[in-house]
Length: 383
Image 1 (cartoon, helix red, strand yellow):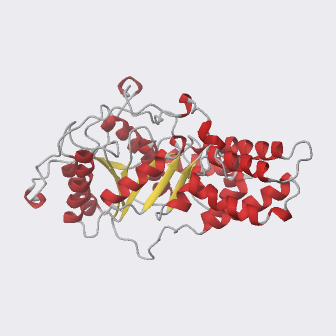
Image 2 (image 1 turned 60 degrees about the horizontal axis):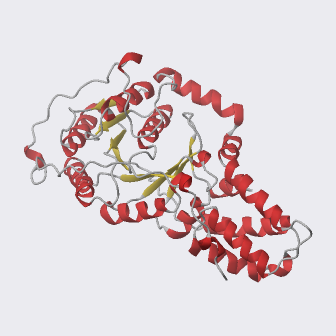
Image 3 (image 1 turned 45 degrees about the horizontal axis):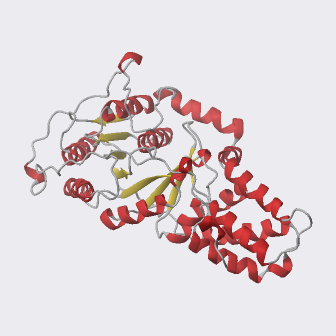
């Protein structure tokens, strides 16, 4: 089957410009013997007013409109009934749904019958929605075998929905332990601009809403204003934070955070890391070093390594996931900004291609818009 889509020029607006990534040689202070490290005093959460808020960030949303700790739980609970989970999910996937449904309807305009030409156009449509070439070819083989049952756009959408559900439902699910470790250490990684800091703030608020004691490790010591921005999120979510000065050793911050969490009886430790390009070898080595320092203080830590991906980057998100996984063994994914793209098909591509559970999807800026990924609800919202 011919690929007409290859002949089209890519719209430069669809591809975000690469972000600058400062190469910093890995720190050596904890490379060999983290046990000899002398723990500096842990600072309390930063009190920040409007005048002190950082102006620089990595392209993520700032928490200025997020409610304070006591109000975070109440705000999330009042937002949920207003639209409901499915309503917010459908709203977040509106661009992708409109793109798919409208174009499928157009395929059958003028009472067209299904033929090779129509299937070619459908193939192009699915690839444009970022479902991916390999996954699209698998879908097209299954649709072609059922062509005799397709007479209308609704018939095609029904079959397409069934086949997409089979793909996303077969993806590995996140494993939940009946007796989670205490503290549970979650290391959050990702390139700059994917919404990593925002995701940490939302995760902290979720755990606080569940009655958990949360501590955040500000191990992104490279990016300007990263510590201040994360401090605001910690304050808003009612979480504690461990931080050092800018340009400090990230592994030392992570080590101190776990030590503080164990001393204070914390349930959850969220370890922030510097945003980095997945092609920067020395910076990926810094992530490995952070993992080693965590495991020296707490056995089996980190218990979860979560990669945050930006849905608007399309197939580049797959490349990021593969290279991060090779370097630090990922076991969970969070896909953000699904509400800002018509390429929600990247979810199907991720589930089909990667053997890593898709745990969260982000479909908005509200505190409760980071949602657990549910295959059935996702497909229902997509059509």
